[in-house]
Image 1: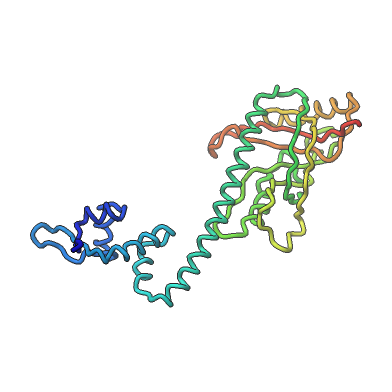
Image 2: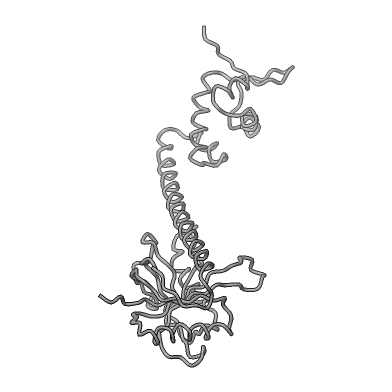
Length: 284
């Protein structure tokens, strides 16, 4: 005859669950032993209970809260189906969030790699480099110069992209303006602020009238890097502009300004490496 009753240690070993967890399940009346020795206080479980412990483990595995598991175990098979369908939808939503988290992680890694690359470039010197093509979401700006605060416009992008509960937008952005012979920083007005898209962001069917999706083609860009400050900005833009004019370089499109932080604490003084870049037209 097979054994009918098992000690808590045996149950733990046979069902790959800790003794502490079984004791807690007993305490909250989720999974109780069939008998308790009044003298030793040892718990004993019947082998038929293993089936129900498997159900609890399954529900716990799909991230069902213990309080809800207690409620679910009171349902019959007919009532269980809607619950499982609801859990399936919840898991699909969590998978969507995890995919977005993975994309954000990937984007952040690319930013750090680019930042490390820029840190190795000679500051204040014009250079050329290859830039990968990318999708972008732009919000148009008005009366915003490099001395202004683009973060307010970034909130508009965030509100559009954070369309799902639990979603979050990466806080990286760039600024765009025309390539001209400016005489002072105050003459530079951004035409738009943008953040990078990876193709799976969920956007409303009717985007905001002040926003647009664009694709920036890959190619060789003429660039200059510098440590951002009000006094540094125009000096380095002028160096980039003069270099392009002096060397008869043909360019297309606007100037892209990208600033990447060297520090991440909000209470420390801003410390950014800024790159200005504009696409170069290669001669055939």
